[in-house]
Image 1 (tube, rainbow, N blue to C red):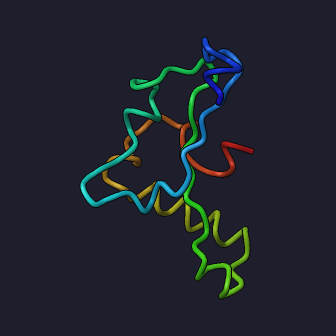
Image 2 (image 1 turned 180 degrees about the vertical axis):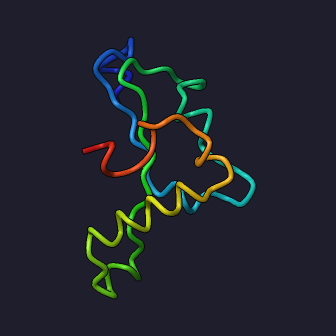
Length: 91
């Protein structure tokens, strides 16, 4: 849908959600860096709260802290440039 309305990718920002539940041994590095589909505004990867986190009443603040820890300790994402990962970046 975005390609139809913004074929050159000038006004679209890509948001990759649930990045933490990708199959083991895979990651979204190529997409986040625009290697697959370039967008002028780029991409942001985020780790959503799980349904269990919501059921357990995890606060958004706690979820953001867990998200930061996830990206900071992930073998691939921890080495990526700042500004590509996290709900705070997106907001």
